[in-house]
Every structure is written in C-alpha cells, then in structure tokens.
Length: 524
Image 1 (cartoon, rainbow, N blue to C red):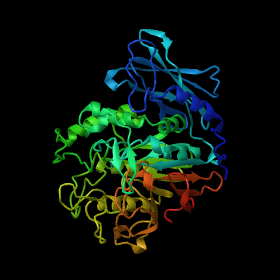
Image 2 (image 1 turned 90 degrees about the vertical axis):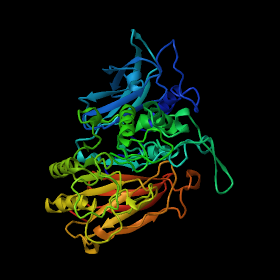
Image 3 (image 1 turned 180 degrees about the vertical axis):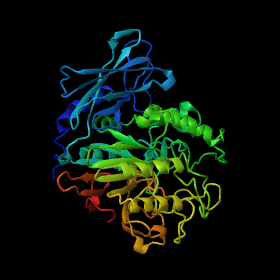
Image 4 (image 1 turned 30 degrees about the horizontal axis):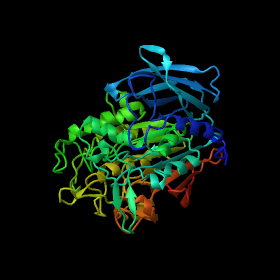
C-alpha cells in the first residue's frame, strides 16, 4: 500500500495530545465544568475539527465563560512562527461554543492547531491553550485515504460507564490513524434518558455517568445542548476529537425516535408535542456543538459533499429533514420521498460532476433493510424498504430514480455506507436478483453502534436484489455494550492501485469482514 503506515503520521503526537487532554478534563466526570466568575477562560470540553478539505477546515471549542476564540496553526508541535486566526466571541447565545474556519492551508500536510480563549475585556488574559491536529486532503493520489465510520452514541439507556472505560471504541478507531471519521447519525439520544444504574441480564450492574439534562427527554434548547455536552464528558471521545477530524450527519435521535416533519407526538413523556418545534431547537444545538460547513449557510442544511482529493468525494445525505410522513410506504407515486426533490436533484448533479475515483454515499439510513416504525401502533415504515419485494413503491421510487441515473450517466465507484440499525453487515445489490433491474450492482456496508443497544438483524426487501454477504448481530434486543456487538467500519483507498478496501470491525478493532473493490467500474 502507498498510504503511509499507520501510526507513523500521528504517533509522535500522542503523548503531547494526551497531556493536553489531561489539562482540559472537566472538574468531575459526572458534572459540567463550573462557570467561574474570575480567572481565565477554560476549554474543558476539548477541541474538534470538521469538514476538512485540501486547503481548509473548521475548528470548534467551548468556553466556560464569555471569551474570544483564537486559533493558531503551525506545521510543527513547537508552534514556531504560528499563523493566527481570530474567531468569534463566545457567549450564552451559542452556549459558549464557537467555530473558526481555517483557509489557505497547505494540501496533504499535518496541521497542528491550538485554541486560545481570551478575556473579551483584556485580550492579554488567555486560558491554557488546547491543542489538536488534522491532516488536510492530499492533491497527490499516491498518498491514499483512510477513514472510519459508525453511528449511534449513548442510546437505549447505555451512557458513559467508567467501570468499562467509557466510550472505548474511540480509542480503537484512533489507533488506525484515520484521515477522518464519518458519524452516520444519532450523535445523541435526546429521547433516551439515563439512570445511574441498569440491571443486566447476567446479574451485573451497568453504571452510567448522569447529568441533569440526561434525566428526561430533551425538549428545551438547554436540554438539547446538555445532551450534546454529555458525550464530551468522555475522555476517549475528547482525545479522538483532538486527533481525528469528523464529517457529521444527523438522523432521528438528535430530536426524537423516528421523527418526521409535521409530526405531533403522542408520547406522554413530552409536554411539547410539536416535532417541528423540537427539531428547530435540536438543530440549533446540533449546529452549536459540531463544526459543519453548511449549517452556517442561509439554508442551514446538513447535506453536502466533502472533496478529499482525487481519490474520494463523500456525499453526506439528510434523510430526516425533507422526508414525507412515515406510513405503510406503499403508495404508487411519491415525489417527496425520503430525500425531498431538491436534495435528490442536488445529489444527482454532484455525483455527475464528481471526478473522484470513489464516490462514497454517507446515508443515515439503509436502502434495502426493512426498518419499521410502530410507535403509534401502526405498521409504518421508518426507512426506505417496506418489505414488498416487487416493483418500487413509496420511498423506493426515489432510490430507483437515483440508481437509474447512476447507471445511465455511467457514474463509477459509488459505495453506500450507513449505520442506524445497531449491528454490522454487508449487502450486495444485484439487478439479476431484483424486481427493479435498471441499475448497476453496488455495495452497502452497515456499522454501529458506537455505544448503544445492539439489536437483531432486520429483514431484507428484494426490490433492489440485496444479498446479505456478511452479518454480525445479537439474537436478542438491546444488548448492552458490556455484552459486545459494538462496531465501526474502516475504508482504506490505496493510492497506487486505487483499490478500496472495506473492513468491518468490532469495538476493540478486530476485523470481522473484508471486501476489496476495484476502481473505475460502474457496478460490481
């Protein structure tokens, strides 16, 4: 392989990053840092980088009080002759979070950065710097690309358990030294309160770190903010964020289970029943706690394409914001579908425009797996497939339109990555097995959860001819992370051959399944 051996690229940084992470730990793992009334600003929640390209990136931080965000970048850890970026003033309007865009960065280089928080009234008074690093995308194909993906964090009652080492999966992902991480949604479980203890089937006790905001379902802006803040209490996640930039998308649990626009909740836990109100509050907190390039556009959208050099474009979908209402999903026409018309046309346009060898479609929901929504007692469908193996119906019509477009425009190198269902699997879609045949073969890889309940496998829908080539899932529902079944995926693109290798991995990094795909093909 031409990609540099991992961990060479960042191994020299680990000691210093661990030291800086130790300096920024919250005062107690179970509580947020106190808002001090004197002294210098502190960044106890660490730093994050996101949406990194060949010459740009976003850097995020949260302060413990009003502060001016300042970012310095350097080619080395010594920070000699640093370049300085003046960021926003952090205050209560954004829950003291802020993001600074770095631009004009060198391609294919390791960028060291540190964030300083300055007293707004006295810029000379700054807090302890918090450091991080990321690598910009390379213009040189020979450098290769490696990234990881997964989703679903702190779900089904399983939060940060110090006795198990917290979110250990982030340590295993960091050990692969990826160029970036795709979180495929369910970054929080706003609808999933945590209790201090949970009795496990084998007689053991699961112990959660708890906070006030995680004691009930999130309804207010403060409660949504507290859900995002909760995950940053975990040391593994903060250390990972300081080393690996992210590409973040969202799904349902950032708001509430299986939500769709216009929904009125029947859930008695909620006093605010209007999902559109909850979603607006959740989106604001989401935009405050992640560095995402498009959220600050006038349309504030999550879907976007991230260009990562000549080998890779990542198409980040939003199957939540623009969908129609969940239903039996068997209607013969469906112009809105799960993406909405505007997003679908954007995706077709950007796929046709892409000149990257590989086009990864980061989908927050699977295509051929039947994901039901029985929350109101009706046999509704939450994802795309509805279990009818015949011609496309409902939301399948939109996916059929997209697959037909990819075939007829001879777009090569499309691969689908997703999470959502809380197990790991690989599906190959083949027209010779399908009811709808006007498409080229493609692969869909499923991973997750990061730290949530694991569930048995969903049934397949034969409309697009899926064959489940690999599966690892429990046979009982809501298996805790103490019982295993926590997964992430790795994608490694070789700079010499252009081959794309997918590895499905367990929580400790053990490889469960490997598939090598060849470049330059419309379908395989």
